[in-house]
Image (cartoon, rainbow, N blue to C red; front, side):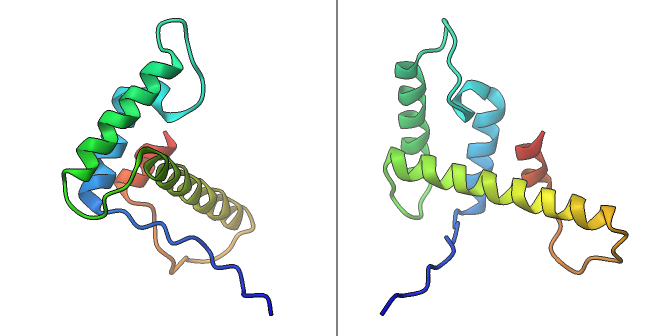
Amino acid sequence: MDLPKLKGNIRIRLNQFEIVVETMGKNPFLNGNKLASFYTAFQRNDDWKTLTEKLNSTGGAVKNVRARQKCWTDKKGEVKKYNILEAARMKTGGGSNNEKHSSALEERILY
């Protein structure tokens, strides 16, 4: 019997999420896979390791670098998907929306 595929539950503490968004704002190369001559993959991995250690010291779940990267990627995708769906709904002339609205922190992810 096949089990239903569960949607990922992206859970991160608010204080940890604030730290990640702030760090991504300060270092935009950490956010993606684009590298430059002055920012190498080694430096990016080292920065992720530093960020992971900082997040693990704030309490909550202790995760490794890969888990923190996946959490960030999933959260970023969730926010972008919600933003696209909201924009499409507004184009169709839909009425008021009772769903959640993006927080200021989530808006920082998009822009």
